[in-house]
Image (spheres, rainbow, N blue to C red):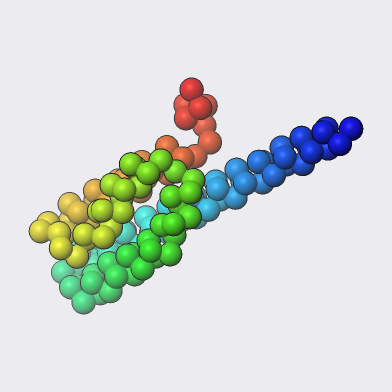
Length: 120
């Protein structure tokens, strides 16, 4: 009987961790997309001061979330996203760099969310 309770507890632990991962990834990606869109707005307005502050904010946010996201996800996908975020300030074409980073965040989220297409 102890084995059954252990199995039930383990299943609930797995379900809880899966829910935590989905919420964490969703919130992180939503916040990143929001910050990138704000940076795109500053770039469009040619507001370099606020653009640099927003990029710094994006990079700081990424540093805080990066380690936990690496626990949940495929490293190759996150490596590419991390490279884009860390090199935003050095980008020659800021408009395309921000658009590419935003696209990578959206692709990452789509690949991590629970869906039948991600299971099979």
